[in-house]
Amino acid sequence: MNNFKKIFSIALITIVFFISGKLTAQKYEGLALTPPMGWNSWNKFACDIDETLIKEIADAIVESGMKDAGYIYVNLDDCWHGERDSLGFIHPDPERFPSGMKALADYIHSKGLKIGIYSCAGYKTCGGRPGSRGYEYQDALTYAKWGIDYLKYDWCNTEGLCAEGAYMTIRDAIRSAGRPMVLSICEWGDNQPWEWGKDVGHLWRTTGDITNCFDCFVDHGTWKSWGVTYILDMQEGLRQYAGPGHWNDPDMLEVGNGMSVNEDRAHFSMWCMLAAPLIAGNDIRNMSKETLEILTNKEAIAVDQDPLGIQGFKYSSEDSVEIWFKPLVNDEWAFCILNRNETDKEFVFDWQKEKVIDELFDKKLDTQNKTYRLRDLWKHEFVGTTDEPLKAVVPSHDVLMLRLVK
Image (spheres, rainbow, N blue to C red):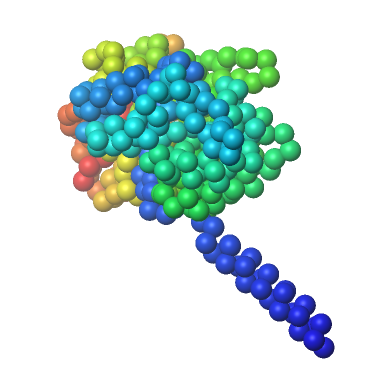
């Protein structure tokens, strides 16, 4: 009998600890209630980063007006790493970051911004630096001591690992470290992170890497990088998983990295319609007036940052001209025509004849009984109402983006 009681007690304690672990091992809530906005070093600079560059970028975010537009995260991607010390703690590259990461974080925080950092679930990062496999809790503790606010966690060199389990481990490590951080899951959509990511991270990549072209892909042999329209098509069927605190991430912006102004505007508009994270990836110290105007268009950004947190949907597609809708607060809607053709296209949309229903989120656009004013979000002017058919010419690789205002 005594043995039975002993075994029962051990079993009970085990169950209590298991349940306790389940209850306490949660991501930090209250973060990323709208899609995160900021800047990341990878698209423009890849491994060529140092503390001088990052400080200059932080300065430029403030001075250019990007901070006022909502860009608050300054995110270092791969290759900031030095070596681990004898106790296993990671240090930044002493030549590239001689002042240390805590000093850099303090500088960024002094600008009213937040700092993000990068690591990888594997034993090495994609750039060959030390990964976090086996060091998750040490790394999370280090990041917390440095003052890190955002962690992008990649998926290279992960042989033998379960993606959901690996990301749960780093989530729990962040929680144990005691500093709230946004966790960006970056395993390229290979393991359907939308199905399990809500309780693990705050955003998850839905595709492989983006590249700076509108309608192409680049074959690297063992993997591909994707242009804007390819990534857009890969979002089909995923909107049900997104919402405040948990976002589909179609990768960072390529605005200002070599596409035409039309293509940059279309790229930015569609990411706003997708309620995607807006993480700039250009050299914002030296950007054109057109690039700045696109990245800081507060009316388009308001569509992305709408507190309902509903991802837009494709309403129709004909002759490579797509119609998208996105429900917004106060019974308003965003409307976007995307012209994927190589030529300009004339377009007519009769509001009185179309029935726009978002069954997934139980939203209906009632233009038969209500009149909406049409606000052009790129011209920044009202261009009519829903009482009359919309007639427009949409340029090649461009958009017409409207807000329907009551």
